[in-house]
Image (cartoon, rainbow, N blue to C red; front, side, top):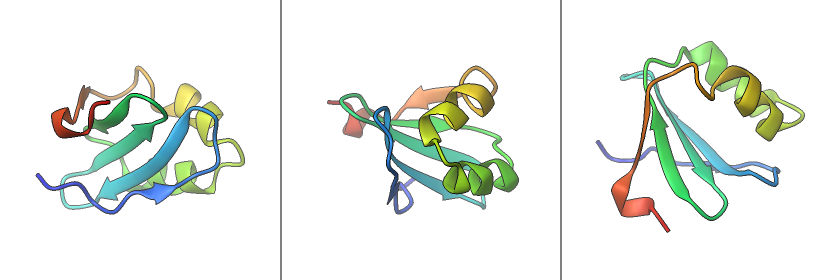
Length: 77
């Protein structure tokens, strides 16, 4: 699967976020560690992530540990 366009966010932990609606896959790029794919993420979670005042806090509370994930090998630093 090709990566969707990743939108930069203002966060000390999260660098950018993208979403593939066809597969319900969230892509999160972290500062210093590349892109990770999170599977079976509802579109509403992506929308709330993008609107969050603190993307890092939103990720920690609503994504981390709640969805299966794996690194995108070609993006690892």
